[in-house]
Length: 435
Image (cartoon, rainbow, N blue to C red; front, side, top):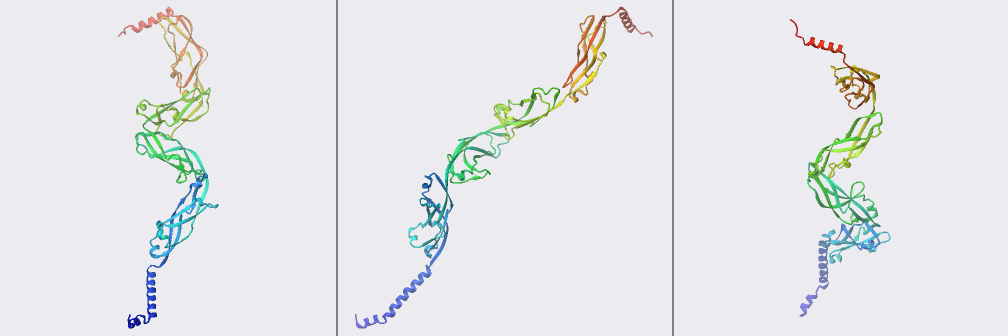
């Protein structure tokens, strides 16, 4: 190298080095201004539970009371940190490392390995808290619920589910809340029987559904079968058996409802015209009787109530003590039939206290008269002599009649004088009138 050139290259070497350092510093400053270090809070990162079977193998179940999600603060270059979201991180809790206080530490890492080397992670709270309790099993009957109404003129009948008893397992505190396992189906507008697969839901005592992943059911679904048949309205006809106490009568029989809607196969309904209740016992009764009967006990085979909730027949029977009334009579009040007046004379005679005794309810006997009783006796075929006669009468409704005393007839042969008088009277009557 020529001395002149060499001298020029090394002239002001210190200034040149200083310039280079300044250039680097300026470049680094510019780069830091564009990609500066920043911090960012990432919230609600879902925490995955690992090795939960280590708890379940001990016959226990667990539920997370807090720590289902975790919040972190990350620090690093803006270009790396700024676009990160909760979806870029994985949070795990290893339940095999459960502490005696039932807590587990949560670990968070970026899903991309290279990001982990570029950021620092600080936890807001990295503890998951668990509730651990015994796992129990209960057997529960499956109940059914029908929502809506079937088509007009039809009624739902027997509803069955298969299986009708299931097993549920889970935490004791959760299962103690379960009071019912129910299968629900909407039957709006249905007019024929059906069979469906229906999901099961657990309910508490307040009718609220219990949705808890810790509950396990032996089956999740059941097969529901429901009968749907046409309906028919028929009257209810009630009658009593036995007799009231001596001296008492039934004055009123009331029952409600008077008619009821039944359902069944159409061919069966055609043969049913009424529901008969014939076993209401009143033997020996004198005071009002009230009783509720189950209508289903009286339905014809092959039928059921259209309204299954209205199964009660309310019956009320009133009694009243009978009263007595006497009517005095004479032989002249008796109509005699069968007389041979052209041959015999008839003379009626009563003996003793000759009267009629009526017994019954006041309303039934107060208007009875000896005329309305139509008292009669029959002497047909009786010969000369004295005979005791039988008196017949029209029986009043709901009343008994007793005739006190007796009635006799004395029959004699008609005398000649009586015959001549009768003949003369007859001739005079038949003679032509003179003008």
